Amino acid sequence: MGLILFIVFGFVVGLLARALLPGRQKMGIVMTTGLGIAGSFIGGFFGSLITERRVTDLHTAGIIGSIVGAIVLLLLVGRFSRRTAVL
Image 1 (cartoon, helix red, strand yellow):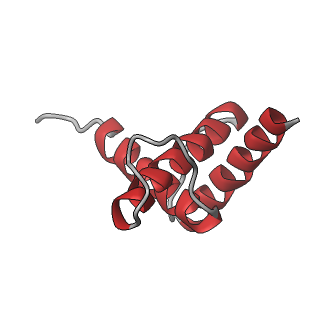
Image 2: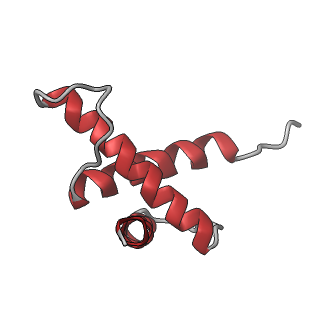
């Protein structure tokens, strides 16, 4: 049951991150869920940098940290995936 809740949490975080970031992101349900899960881990990493928890501990952030992590990941993906035409 814990894994299913983690996937649902990742999906909700991914949806919120995509809704808060302006612009159009072309990704489906699976990629949105992956974005939320990865954002949760990124948020947990940044959270452990400013708290007393070890960085190597595998933990997730709260909902706000997860959304911030997902937005950071979405910005990085959008930044490096854009292809520009060379004239």
